[in-house]
Length: 148
Image 1 (cartoon, rainbow, N blue to C red):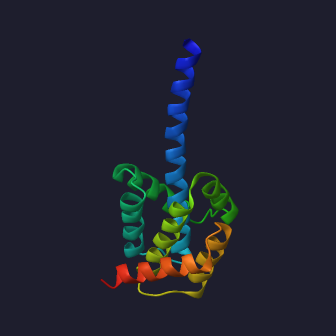
Image 2 (tube, one colour):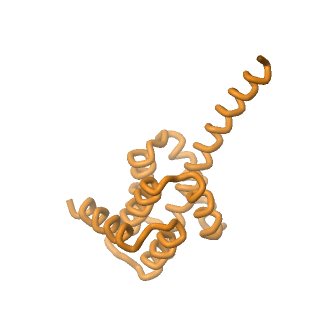
């Protein structure tokens, strides 16, 4: 009985740790995408925050804390493999496609697409096993949202 309770508590803690890890990785990757052009402006930060809350159903208070930490650490960038290996293990194809769409929205939110930004998203799509067609459709959906 005691072992059963320990297992239940450990699995709940593990799930909370995974949710926290998801948020940290998503925000880190989004900040990384926004910073690809050398700056992160208020519109990009706002889009990142809204994407984490609305698309990935994250808690707004936690999002604010994690984003602040991610922005402070933006110069300590991690390799794309760090992000993509976790995402590939823990996200389904639908969630990965939503991530690509959110990244396009972030990149497009400042009104400019820099070559480095589009290159980053193309590389990420490949590393996340998202087809060019699905990535292109995600970009079109992002453009439609921005132009509404």
